[in-house]
Image 1: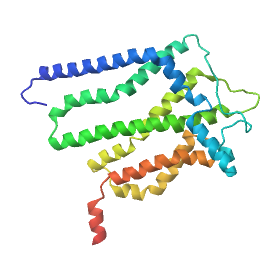
Image 2 (image 1 turned 120 degrees about the vertical axis):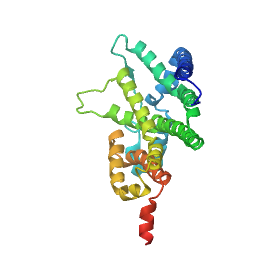
Image 3 (image 1 turned 90 degrees about the vertical axis):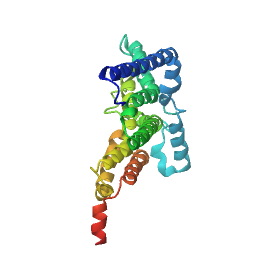
Image 4 (image 1 turned 30 degrees about the vertical axis):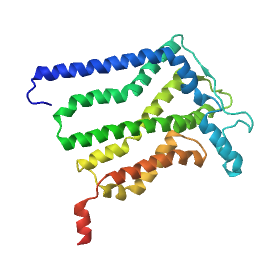
Length: 273
């Protein structure tokens, strides 16, 4: 920040930034609250219906390759996969309307929030630090939204498909509550958004010298096993196709992280000698 500014001047700048952040967030909440019933029906509840894109993709895949019949989402080979949610608490729908609005508003306004914070921090950085920090902010946003999209279009539907159909006993029917559905929905989308930040985290750690590319080479086999276990936990299904559908993008993130980290120059020189 400008050295000629006093502490109170900086505090005024921060107060202005926080005011703009709150104003944008509140405006987004108001707008999204009004349209939330449409958003719920068209987007949030879309994975409960059989015409969701990933379900139709698996259906076509299973019909063209009999060996992949386990990947079919049809029930008994005819009826398409679908789920009916129930509400078991009096005020649940009202509070979910509010919380869903707040979460979605945070996701929508995140670029603006980061930009306002960036305008406050930027003057206090050197030119090269501004460049690297700017790239990190942009990359972080892109990767987070890619992760959330992967969670929405792939991970959550496959997880929902398995958990909704799993029965410990035929005498125990599954009745999926709205609260349970939303908890899983929000958790998986945020989790995948954070998982997709792995390349950015690796790049930052590489910049500080805490890790090098040799780390990824040395622990690649361990990472493959760990990522397969992680994919199995996220989508605990019985068919390998679903497992590797989740594993492949996560493993690509691991390899991308390795590319973004510099090689250990000392190790390379030792190998040449």
